[in-house]
Image 1: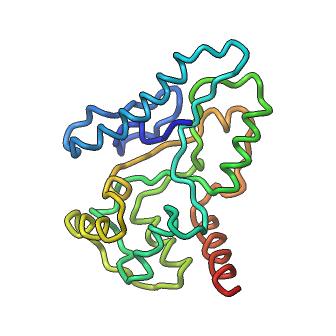
Image 2: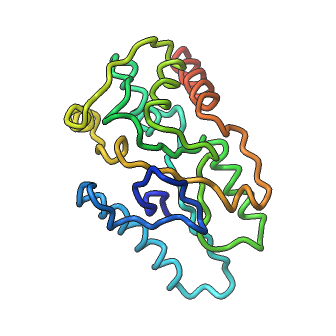
Length: 209
């Protein structure tokens, strides 16, 4: 296992497995963001150093896995529109990479069956989107027409209340699944709007039981 957080905070181009930039030395970002990059790189280094002559090694650089479960990342993101704060955060230009839980499971099974694949593989939907657009689709899925935007310092307060970190909201993770697509994997939920609608519908159905 690894994490898509190993990639650099950037707006100019997507990060795939071949041309993506590894993070940790970007200017103008909080210094502590380097910590999560270092964790991911250490995971991958430990995997490569392990002596497993009969085992194929695949580093799953996984984006945020979205599920309707309480306490998960989708639940945390969904609190913002439900509190009327579902606007853009910190300007909303930063890209958000994600993957629906069904596609995550399907992709792992796909990689288990593909014995010719090894090394880093990005587990992320093919269409990351700016946070402002993600917020709009979240509001639409929750039937909340309006959402107040949040500045960076407001995001700090909100992250503290939700027991998470602003890196989740402010780091531009523009990660794409280059190898999965090249190897023929087809996503059931390539668009965030469809994923959000399905997850909110399933969450409400579970709450009604």
